[in-house]
Image (tube, rainbow, N blue to C red):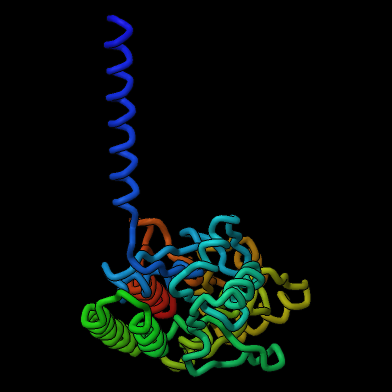
Amino acid sequence: MSIRRSATALALVALAALALTGCAAGAADERAQVVVTTNILGDVVGEIAGDEAAVTTLMKPNADPHSFEISAQEAALMESADLLVSNGLGLEEGLQQHLDRATEAGAPAVVAGEHVDVLDYASEGGAADPHFWTDPARMVDVVTAVEAALLEVPGIDGAAIRANADGYLDELAGLDAEMTAAFAAIPDERRALVTNHHVFGYLADRFDFRVIGAVIPSGSTLAAPSAADLRQLASAVEEAGVPTIFAESSQPDRLVQVLASEVGVDVEVVELFTESLTEPGEGADTYLTMMRTNTERIAQGLTR
């Protein structure tokens, strides 16, 4: 090949590269950018936003919302978001500095916990319980708040957002009815819950359960139980005659197994999905799936 032909070929390659680059830039997602902290809220927000916004969820599947970390790039994305959605009420302990920085930078924000009827931990001096998603009725308020915030984002089709929100509210109503029917079959003396840590206060409030206690006597998985805590809880479990105690998917169940052995009776340990969604096919890849799986396991565990 001659030098002239070589140069021509190189020029054509360069032009092709430029054309591809231009196409890539043109194909960049120009939709509104919504950033969500937890994957439970990420799923819900994604359903409401539909195709009207690009939703980025920071928390990976099977992670712990109390302690997950993000990259510098993700932190920058929070600050430039058209809308930032977080749980609040102290849940995202490891992320709070980034949330504060993003709101100070002017990112529009929805803190879901500010839009629900909040319960306090009975054993923690009035500290707010952030696990409101275990009650689907409270998630109605979250959907309404996110819908209102999305309607304020420039460039979004309001009719599409309203239709998506209405459809998801129907899904929540169906879920609530299913949970009510499933839990109605549990005898009053069996309506007691023991878990890794205090996560079911809202479910108990909505569906008339008693929370006997938790292996970790705290709203955070970062806390740890003492030997006295375990002995006291073992006595309470034995006295209540609870047939099943529940371990969370985001936390090892070793302490729950220790508690079961301490009680010295036939106590089954059943895994629930409580603070994180899973990968597809693992039992809790959406909020609705997670709640239905937990409802089935609780109902079966407490009626065995």
